[in-house]
Amino acid sequence: AVAYEDFIAEGDPAHSWPELDERDAAALCYTSGTTGHPKGALYSHRSTVLHALGVALPDVFDLGASVTCLPIVPMFHACAWGLPYAAAATGAGLVMPGPKMDAESLTELLEDE
Image (cartoon, rainbow, N blue to C red; front, side):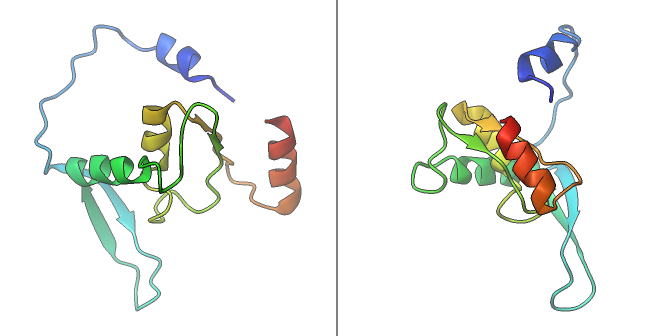
């Protein structure tokens, strides 16, 4: 596990962020293909922010400093796409499970947290 503060401490404080339009492409995810072949779904910066704001609403996941989230659906799933951003925005903890999604690995992860 890497604490957020440790992660950002290694960043370049003089980093020059690019100018972006909110409608520019931010990510490309693929559907599961339940209605046919998987299709690419392009997300804009704006849609990503709006999704995170929606997830951060009190009546959605009730995120806050006393909450720790453990998303168990793939990050491209509609329920997880904005969760990392919403967790950071609300002060909630976020534990990413990694590739091991079996019961034993998840139980061990929960016990470690």
